[in-house]
Image (spheres, rainbow, N blue to C red):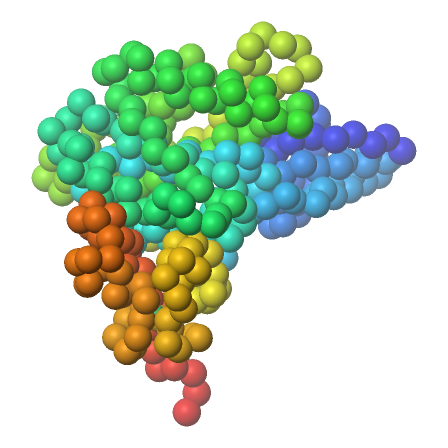
Length: 332
Ligand SMILES: Nc1nc2c(ncn2[C@@H]2O[C@H](COP(=O)(O)OP(=O)(O)OP(=O)(O)O)[C@@H](O)[C@H]2O)c(=O)[nH]1
Ligand SMILES: [Mg+2]
Ligand SMILES: [Zn+2]
């Protein structure tokens, strides 16, 4: 018997690309494709008449749930959520991706891409800011924003530097970075730049529909010896564009994880009257008071907080829709 460890670099019904490469029979591949995820670490035991593939414990898993559960990638060290305003930005989709990342404790950076375009201006970037917790809140999960453009070399170098830093700080020998986001935001363009390849095709936004064309159809992982060190490597992973990102398995408490400022505000200014306050229309709500009573906070802080409350309401509405759909579908 012969045991070896591998990482899943590409996977679909008939192919399984592993690093380091290993020959596997079609039957084993077909069987494994039902339970293996991209970037899984697997242990393969080869014996004379059969190969066994065992998935090693995942540190996290990025998945979405619409009708069924779809795993996008496992063992993510750092997530790059790529956003832009051409094609138009979808707040709910991006907030859902972040909610999943927060609940899987995946470190995240939001890349605001295409800053060379008028659509992706400072006002838009302010809107994106509503996706991240207000400053000073008690939190361990705290995504940052990085501006980027394919036509601005310094911004691309800053991205590379960030990747190097994260990798250098990591105690693991290998670090996996995943690019995710709506179709057409520029994930594959960034992938090609970072890997110095033209492996991933890219295509223009549809002028008619102002949408990406879903150019990337399957995820690809590329191993890169970033600083030319032999035993340390990074993996850059490009994924297909996402328009809906279902999180129906999460609940309101999971959503609260993304809004640590609600707790911070109550710590500083007193608790809301009701312990299970949803900060909607309940009387004696500290959070809502902070945005409404002009003497409590400076204008800028109130504006930011209002945007955060707006996002919170959008997410709660999403959960209410989800619940009423479930009630409609359940047998009477
Ligand atoms: N102006 C401008 N265009 C960009 C930038 N980055 C990417 N693009 C263009 O945006 C279009 C879409 O880029 P892709 O890299 O294919 O987008 P994607 O996110 O991989 O799209 P899917 O594979 O469909 O999910 C291409 O025409 C790119 O050349 C940028 O920074 N500025
Ligand atoms: Mg692509
Ligand atoms: Zn409240």
